[in-house]
Image (tube, rainbow, N blue to C red; front, top):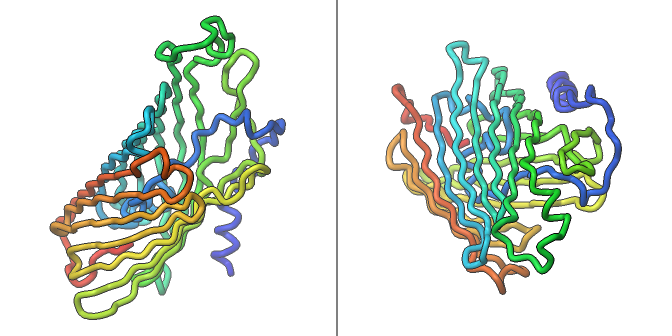
Length: 319
């Protein structure tokens, strides 16, 4: 109960920010949590408290083509690295995301800090992140009905959106669970097109992730998990709900499947742990909902490299 109270207090550190003017959702400029399919191999994109939990310097690259076959569909690239320091209670990390969709390009860069507490049954960590999202829309590539439309003249400013987030993460050899608030600040567009920050508890997004590991046989393990992205905004609630299952074969091949309930998307995932340091992965998303008529699905490639100079082969990292 002591650590539970501390966790709740930590996640609400954003309460010290002044309550801003309430604005309709249509005016919000937040870029939000991008959709990934292989986030389980890169927990830092979900929760800053994940930094350092793999106990080595871990580097991750991903390239995602969203809604293939649709003109102007999003292309998302991400890069992250995190590691514990010499004092293994403290860890640092860095995430960078680059996204292009239509005539808009956005870049997000965040520094992450985590503090770890070793418990009898596992490890508890608290994380903070700080950085900014930069969004830039170039309307010159659009063919307009009215070339003098003022909307496309006043809203083409590059937007710099600084923000902070926080999270709590617990893991043991068999279980993990995390809760994060990706952003404490929201933004609205002013009359002159600039971004104005404000704070509102009603605009928070809550990211909850959890999973477990079950030993089926000497060479087969099963890892179920889920991810819930819940928005407190008045016009949207459950923005993402994933149910995942991975079969780990001889600690070499990870064969998995996911179903994104909120979007009616099925995901097939194959990952290969080539050695203790290098993992490659490929996923394909098949939409059953509205996008099925417009898209050929989404594909994502990942590469993770870890600088493991001393490896305990009897206790590899699954979370």
